[in-house]
Length: 593
Image 1 (tube, rainbow, N blue to C red):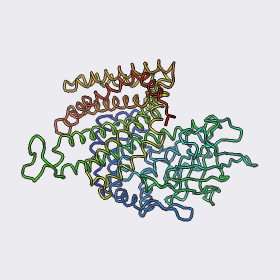
Image 2: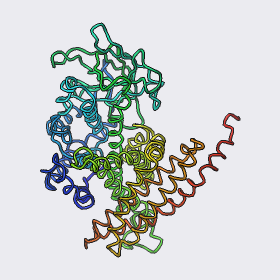
Image 3: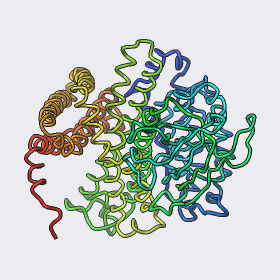
Image 4: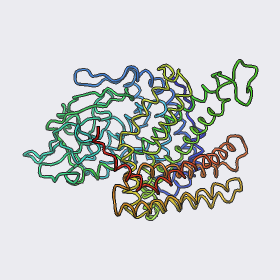
């Protein structure tokens, strides 16, 4: 079994020192009573639950997996009991708004608490995440009567939830959805069709599952404009009580590369009673609320998996003896040096640590923007926060999952051959993390969303907001001579990203394919710059500290911007020559044998 020590000091440092979240919470009536001590208590309790209840089930759950028995899914041994404890402790309601029956804690705090759960047992943590998004979607778009049927049970975690989008012929292109919704003689909606790749689609943890289903009505136009959203209860609801099955049946339990303990299912809906959510033809718009929340959760998952991978790789590097350091024996009293004595190993671990620090700060900061979008008293600040969160959602999902895969893979390789062996636990982390690049919209789609919808569509307005934040941090770090290189770097990043975005926008006016071809490189470029911005903020929060922990933070920030600059320069060069690169690609005939 992997070891895991929840990084509580790191998490508190991000909240209290880097983001200064308690000060910002006091500006919002919904969070005004939350103090730093409250946040610490939540993180400590999440850490205890993660280590005490979830970590012991991670490896055994992966080995045992879920199984299908008589049209039902049985989760691995110990999971039903752990889920009951999870609900009894109140974790499902942590960040649910008070008016929906929750505890009303900020999403920034929830992201850090969830990080611990995801690190200890990602498959389990996914069971909780989608449910809260389902509730948020119903709260925003459903009628009061529909919301009242589901909200108390979803808020408490007594019922779970899913989003049913994908069909065998309709993956990312949801305009191809064939599931239909028709009204019966009483005017009630009935949904029929098949959905696949449904996380938590069927299981034995809750007596009911609430499905959000995309479907089209008989007279709806083709494409995405004809899609509507419906809520379907697995069990019929009769005067608030659970009745028989509501025409929802299990037709497949996916056998997966990773996350084997989480039930991913194919479901059939056969005349299932349903309620309309939002307006007809607006289903995709409604569902994006849930999809964007899920994309941010992917970033949180990547931080957790990267953290547990790093901790175990670091411990292995300190104890595994192999060879001598090239500069001379590091520990001559031993028959060989620990592999951490080798500079390549240290560089790999340093890059891994830098990623975790920046990624943790980023997901918490985006959570803070969402908190402010909902609750800040100033409408202009709410708008700015929402715009920044929208801009960086594809970065959180796409960039962080790409980079996490690289670092977790490097951690596995650091173990040598034993990293390939099941008993070390490292190969499970690699398998579990692999889906993060695919679900909730593949990373290529995240790149297209970032460049097309979030940058070019508004002529760089959101990007200018982010550049202003870079400039603000640059001004702050200039007050500390040790950090002065960060100021010039931040200003250069803001200018270069804005310039290359403008260049791509001009090209896209004449040929849209140029934007699509450039999108992945632009996502990576902006991701590197945002991570450097987070490193600068971390250094700013640590620069006054005198112990090794704080001085390491400053050193890592300075090293990050120096190490990443060659990659940024390369990406800028590629983006400026994007049109020529696309022309060479188009000259290739892929139909040739």
